[in-house]
Length: 175
Length: 212
Image (cartoon, rainbow over all chains, first blue to last red; front, side):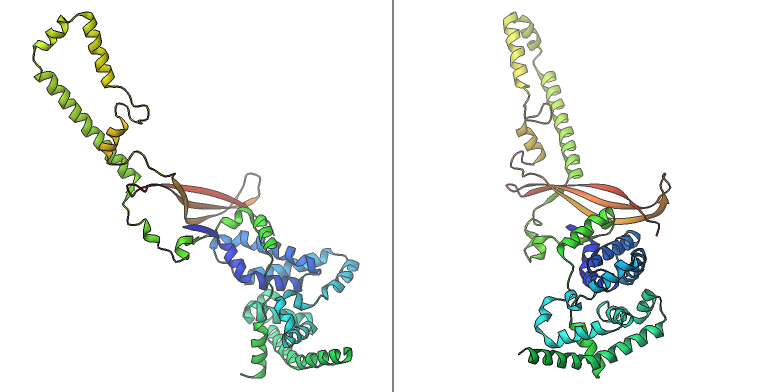
């Protein structure tokens, strides 16, 4: 009988979602992995011996660390990094999406969302957290989180067709 | 399903890209001992491939303590038989033998001593004094040759968190105790025999904690 550290299977289940959230929270795209590593190691050192760690704890640690790290970066650098942050969201998803126009439009619409709504959508859809867990992760009330999600979905519903149309217009203008 | 639910379902279909292997190994290094505090037992490769794991299970397994006890008892029995034979041979021998030996010439008595010492010659390969390999084989009913290299296996049993304590330097640390069972398996395909030795072992890991 072989043995394997539990964190590996745990990370295989949650790593991709956590990295997506870390990418959203970090000020620089190359900082996301550092952020996730720091948050995960801290939480696993505290609770890893139990064999099962709630992903919500790691999401919360990512967010708090991101805030701490952002404070330590000076304003000028933060402004420069804001440009780097505008890397397409599709970079954080499987590359096979590139062929699917509808899915690309969806991601472009998610990118247009205000940051606060985008993080709620990320935690709800891909993080698979409950509204209660999201509220605790973001230090917001349950109602605030739920309404941000509702508004976000409403916007996405309106924006996806726009994105599809825009893409069609772009391609026809090019041709 | 309304439009928003459809939208949710569509979003859920999009899968975030998995972290790279390079990042996973970086994480493993960063975790250090903390990564090994909780372990999961994995099925053997042979079993997971759907192979027949009972190939060896039909052969008898003799546990190491049982083998030692058996060999010990057999040795005592052999010694008792040898003492009995020696006693009987000396007591039943004709009384004239002693006189015969004393009547022998010095050269003849020397030859007799050499002959008796040759009969008790040591087998250099034998691990037991006074017994040759063949005799050990007869007594223990175990083959002497044909053993494969022993297979070592570390079996994880459980982990116990002993809590947080303060180290001499004043830094907090978590103490975690791991319990393992080390198994050594000797097998002899010719006689279809296996000997399994199990030894319990404990490991204590100290995980330094950050004050965050």
